[in-house]
Image 1 (cartoon, helix red, strand yellow):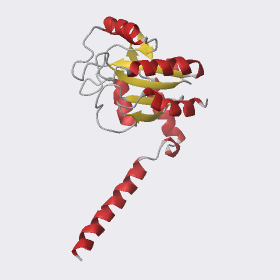
Image 2 (image 1 turned 45 degrees about the vertical axis):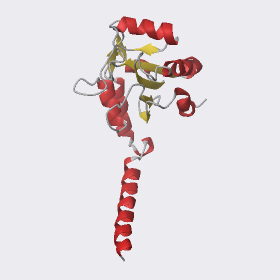
Image 3 (image 1 turned 90 degrees about the horizontal axis):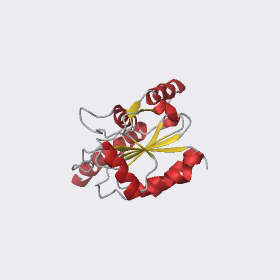
Image 4 (image 1 turned 60 degrees about the vertical axis):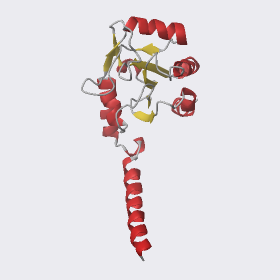
Length: 196
């Protein structure tokens, strides 16, 4: 009898958590057309600066599938640069845009200037995909792009470098990937969105 008193509440809580999770994970198909339009407009209104100070507008990428990643050249996961570059080279002509957002918030792993960071990415990892100026992904100075992404694909703050966000070609965030998720593990989802 004591066992039943423990097991039944645990089962009820588990069911409630499952139902809540299912309700929270409705996905894009559950959005109304007006919700999709608002999210799309919000994303395409966002801007960021390039390492040289030029404005990069998300609206430049309308109709493209976008992979956004917070990067750091001194991080233990820096080998992901090579995988990201491979995705860029493989799918850029099919409509994929890869954008690296360098960040120095995790153990000072992007300590160099914007220009030195670009050179390091090019020389050490062969990066040719788009890079932005260094930005913050957490805290009061979080860049608006990451405010939008964290709001759209709920989760806790960015935990580490190389957190990845895949955006559909209409500006709707599709999925968030953990830092340790290798670029090649995202390739299937990219192919689905590109319909290749």
